[in-house]
Length: 120
Ligand SMILES: [Zn+2]
Image (cartoon, rainbow, N blue to C red):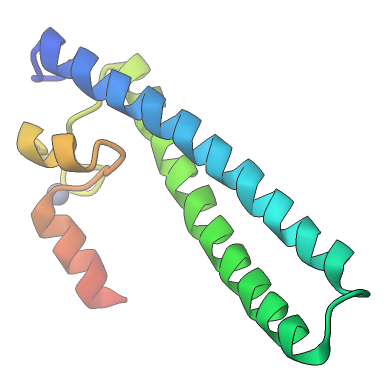
């Protein structure tokens, strides 16, 4: 069982639900933006085509970030349902509520996240 209070868990779950909706909207937006570039390619000049392609590359990079974050949000929601949310996926230690408030989709405590970042 999670050691988070029910009220804290509800707050974080609401936050995650919101994040999920925002990310899904962003992903739709990313896809629409990528399609617009293709449609416009025939009627734009060379310079603006370069701009458009840069824009598209940025959109695709954003889209990747949004997708990865959405996966983490889904996993966090799943862990809430399973009752093991709030524990680090690496060491099993408690993830502080303050940290979850800032990044509710994070599955790691600060120590393990730091270690993972150092390793990569
Ligand atoms: Zn940890």
